[in-house]
Image (cartoon, rainbow, N blue to C red; front, side):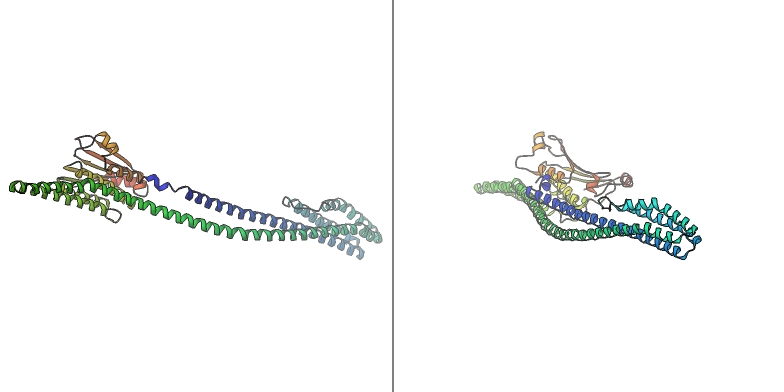
Length: 450
């Protein structure tokens, strides 16, 4: 099974994933847009209320100004009127300026009564002259004229201001009703969008999760079937052929059973063939059992694979460890061991090697090297493998699965060298630090030889 199969999720699963992402994005976008609309309505309502409060405050200030001047006029005290009139006017003028600033700072789209600003400007322009005229009349003692002027000049302004305030209050009530209706509509839309998005997302996510799980199970099943198919082929290439050879020897001995010496030599040969079949079967079973269930560290697992070579005439079995051993990711460890066991098994089963060396290098990256002094292979066999044998193909696929670099160096009668290099981030699950590099360099080389 190729490593790219892990990323080939198929068109239906890709479509489900795209729909899930699109639904989440669209649902969230709709919710955010509804909240944005609600915020716009809230801002408009707050602006209208602020406008109404500013106008009411100015109206109260104008009424207090008129009432105070009327009280001073009724008291007949010219000195108090002339002394207090100007400060009262300045207070009213400041209130008018604040009201104009409040109306000018309204958010865009807020309606402002067009008649209110001209009224404020008229008051600001005419009020100083009116106050001065009232003060002069008070100084002359013409209090009747003062009261008439207050009634004739300030009463109309108060009346006009009251009309404008009523209009603004009516506008504010209309804005409030409209905002309430729109907020209710926004709330209903949110209450519809959120559950629909959540339910749809749940079902699509559930389907996506189920499809991913099914895909993983399929991939694992394909991997197991592929591994067992490879083992079946290896058994056919080794054990069954050995048994077939044993049968031929037994048939030949039976045909010459009258010749005691010939029969004895045939039985001795048959014993060798059966012993070979037992060793080949045991090696195949060891390969089958070795895998993810073996939780031993990498060096011990490879040493165990080297120990299996002893019955096959491999006199030198060497395991070198260079650098300080680091903890390798469990999944990567399984794949490294599978590649190493396959390389070792090929060396003693097919290359007839008498010396096998396994070297593990721990540094910034991880490297495993398996060397033998066997028969080697020609370039065609090295690139495509032997007919009916899939060991090299399996090693290359396992190396690609963990993003490793696989290299095969061989030539006829010159042995074989297999090198597997894995970057530190993949092998160790993290980037190795400078201190780790220094420790690896100082750690030197450990060597075990049997």
